[in-house]
Image (cartoon, rainbow, N blue to C red):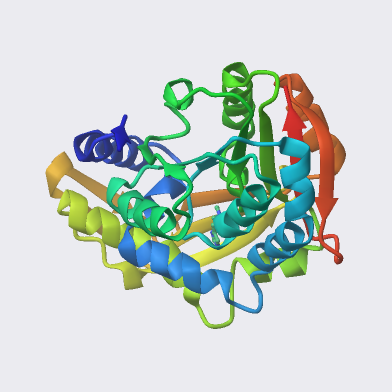
Length: 317
Ligand code: AVJ
């Protein structure tokens, strides 16, 4: 496995993010730290909730369109950013294998351990494929990913919505800079829709998303020897209409002070104080086309599910 990111790098990044985020006003934590083993399991549970439609809608699109995606891309390499647990991956691998062009699968993820396990399983199930996992942060290491002809870069799930607009535009431009003629980006984005459905998707009745949100506090407790009491924070999900994104926050239910030993830091929270833990931007097709175009990427095809909730775009440099 190629490793551009070690456990030490991750540890340092977490320390920097937590120190910076808890010493600024308003406080903020980046969403990438949700996903330890428990957080990843909670996210899997979210994808099966009745309120959380994006995963089902994207699966519908990929199921219906995989053969066309394969034909249009003619991909020899599937490079997957933020390699998930594999269901969407398999839809694409099956279609690209049937099309006869695919040789190589490159899953990219920050978690080396998770990646090794997932890649091993894919390698067993697709013996004709070269599987080459890369432990990397796609916000930092795009230029280090393996080059090749006719690559399909898949960035699915709507995860691009976690980046604030400036970061997103930088990311797309850096990605475009690594792409050549014959390469394509397969991008999944959630679409703007009525506020109620959006908020419910991020504030489910069973409270799984609330637990997922608070999981970042468990991660900080374990990794940085902190003493957050997760139950002393309540889950908040709101639609920011001006920016067209969902925000998740953690609201302190009382005046409290938290000690983060490994940072030698003491942080106070006022009762009612809110700390932002995630944005999940929702897109309008025209705005997405404009953003892609600004990065030098041009949609060759776009699909939506039958309900019009989610969109997958195939874009080329
Ligand atoms: C995995 C980033 C696409 O933003 O919808 C789910 C994460 N957060 N519920 C999203 C998430 C709360 C999810 N992504």
